[in-house]
Image 1 (cartoon, helix red, strand yellow):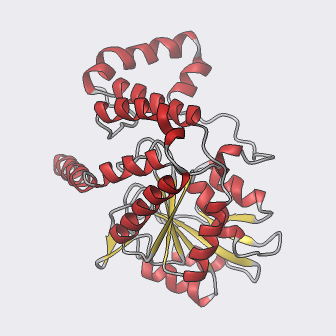
Image 2 (image 1 turned 30 degrees about the vertical axis):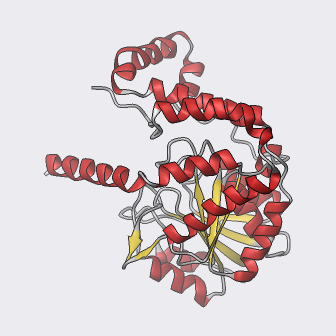
Image 3 (image 1 turned 90 degrees about the vertical axis):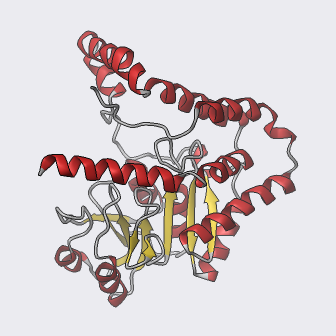
Length: 317
């Protein structure tokens, strides 16, 4: 049995319904749209255990505005993991800040505390702690090291939305937590991102930044929904096994470059000279509605994934 690289957690019916609904996005009044987004933000904050959540078009946009709110001098250092997505580095560079990469622990895929302390200098202003693949490190130790040196702490809990450390959810230990609602997450809103914080001043700055965002063109969101639907169909077990996987093998032989792009090879890794306009577009009421629906199901999906991992671990003993 072949296994797809990533799957979509939306039911087909939800994708189709959202695609049709996207044609009337412009018919919802601005105040009503803001109220629907705000309702979801409150629910997500409660779910995570934070005082406030603010929605953005991407997690990278949330990171951008979190860092910008601190008004550091150009050249200030931001400690980052060597395993991350390129747009996170792009926003750091766009703000004139310097990314510093620190080695990870093999067991947790999070910062090695010894290497972290070595990397901190007088010019270090912030640390981006990223939880990979749902693994939970000793976050209290990493936070203690960072606090001792006065660092601004950002937690990227996109891979660990429901993970906990000593009864407290990841994303709530630092100054701000960011979550990506991208296509293969269990809580996916056809893109989008959220920042959660208990800091009232930072929360106010993020709300102000959110108000400056441009309206998302319906056609752009419609294209994301259609892409999700296509991905959803293509990664169904029997469709992927009988159709998609053999087709990818054929394409890889006929056109190796195309085969690499379709299977996740990263091309064009040069830093962005200008951040795309889509980074500064709003999180829509339709995306908020999808998140409200999916939030009811994420616990069940997490339990299924945990069960699958336990079965795999038993088979390897």
